[in-house]
Length: 314
Image (cartoon, rainbow, N blue to C red; front, side, top):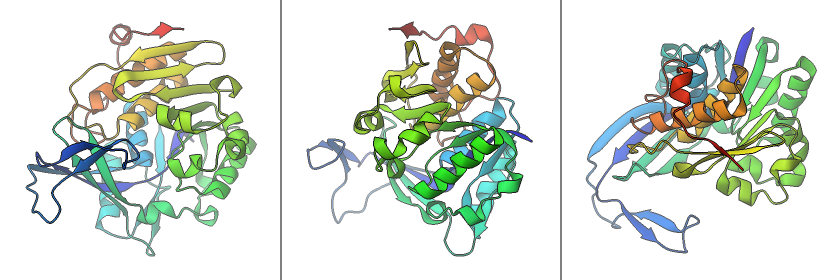
């Protein structure tokens, strides 16, 4: 029996830092800003860093570090990156027996273009991570108290089967959907949100989910707001905590670090405010290191450390 199983993507990441990346404000870009470089030129890369990532593996590492018996259920190719992902998970204390290996696709791969401020643009090949199927799921081995689900590439049919399985088995769900899931809209996702114990979004995702209100959820709603901090609604009260303000070397994995630590806090029996503090602390640390796992907490922090992080209610 596991304490928690994470379900989501697993990727090989390469981080590329260069002073030649230029941020260009323009309405042509969905975020209002483009990360650009000269067309037809040879761009000098200052640093290169290889690591593993993806929502499934990043969150699993935090849960394992914080003392939970953790397994990762992700889909990888029968290739060197897939074997590396398994190896890295084991070094973090995460069980890999639920991992799915396929010969049909390569392991997912991300090229991450980092600016000097630690902000990034990600070029993603989703590969094996994009093709989860219900028939491949190791249902009989998924014995756990909690599931943490991140993006499944928009496979809404599989999501519904996972939620039905969790209901039947009495498993609590924390859900951090990706853009492909959110594209279905609130009307389609409403029954799944209602069955979620902890629902995690970033601010842009929450604003884009038309019709969604924190007060309509039966569980805890968490909304991250980048370097500004994060909000929590526990069904009756709302809380906010600013970020730690640590200088960011790389922001990749900050959302995964926050969400998984918050869920870990709730699993430990913490109040939502202390779980919020734990999430802020973990995300604040991960941005100080290259990669999405290298800066995360190595163990549960002391209560005195958590209470140094400010939380206000509103």
